[in-house]
Length: 589
Ligand code: ASP
Image (cartoon, rainbow, N blue to C red; front, side, top):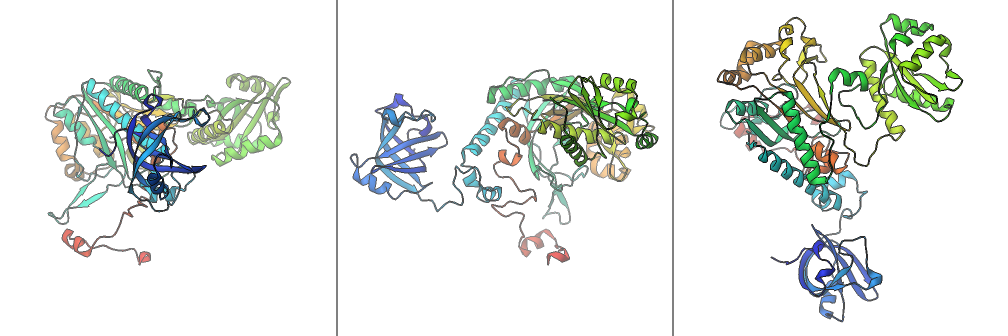
């Protein structure tokens, strides 16, 4: 080894010891003719002193040093004089007096300073290897490593087997678009990169592995929305002979272990469980942030009976009215009320009806459209007290719930209700509808077509498919969906029926899923599983706001790498081998 000690591990106990260190020059200072540098390696930094009284030759070499040069230093650990002690740094009580110095590599002037937290993301992604040297990125990537290790340790302990599934698989488009890989040997045929190992993990249950997991890379060719990546990592889990509760309990134990092992944080287990319908009614979303209250309250039965023309009209159109209530210390000013209304409109509301509860009674521009009795009911139903402001928006159900859900989170931000000090509020959302309508009004699976309906709804599949409840569950934390899973269909006839219901022809079913349906007929145990979004979990653990900050080499929102410049064109020769001709968009030429 070119070194026998790590920079960050030296303490005052080492005083007097001879050490050989290697690392990067992070900072350079000259104090009264003596040069000091901070030498950095992954473990931390240590101060190196180049003293002409120790070695004039070393000082001469040290004068050639620039930021981020890679050097090897041999020297003696010394306690710093009292006035030079830096209690903020782990190695702040000591320094190493250099006796030998070798420059191992030079470094060009940097595009941004390593410790500059304000470098633009474009520069950071272009010079990712420099960005990854930054303390926060080092912390994030190492946290990721430790979390993955904790996952493996825990799952191994409780009897899981890690199995790798193919990266080149069959294209079975549903949900997102597949990334396709052309076959050279079978011209005109394609592999697809997995959107998730869904069918493989189920096949592993049929194969008798009982408890499978994989840190699985998944690929989805989506139009990238905020904070998505074309490739991302899932912790993929599948278990045999289980029901929903078993998978949820296993996941809770796992998350509890990982958070405690890597962050020393004890989670509140079991996590709260609410149904999809309840989540929508109380929070207007299936990914509620449970760190604050501000629950939605349906006040249609009171508010729709107001005497104003616009309310009557809305009532005739079947509108619902949803309230949110929060405390104000004093009578809100006109300006404040207008601001609230603007925020609500930004969230999609047509307007905001506002009632303030003062000791003299309910105040507000719209009180004249309601009787005292109705206002009393409103106060009671919303559980409001003196000093509370009741805000109500009306509109088509369930859309207006979604609007008020958005308003709820905006309001929480505005009121600084979100405790950023790393509180993790997990919640399970259960009993999703099995199907939903896509933009064209066709039936699609809410999760994926392998999700089992609840037993007692199977007979409603043909008649009332949109009312069928799925045996599925999502794990949500602080407003982020962290994972999704379900008990699977293990009967080939039912599976075929569901694939038909989502619009596949017999031929398509046979072609895409024939092998899988066949496998279901060879002794398929009841089974279910979950996939947890690892990037997002690490992002939350690291207190970051973008998954790009916890992925070593991410792509941009436009799915390109700014560092290595993919996707890129390929040689004609390569295309020819694959039997491909590229059609270019006219406007590209
Ligand atoms: N494979 C599913 C997904 O990626 C998750 C699951 O049901 O296990 O969304």
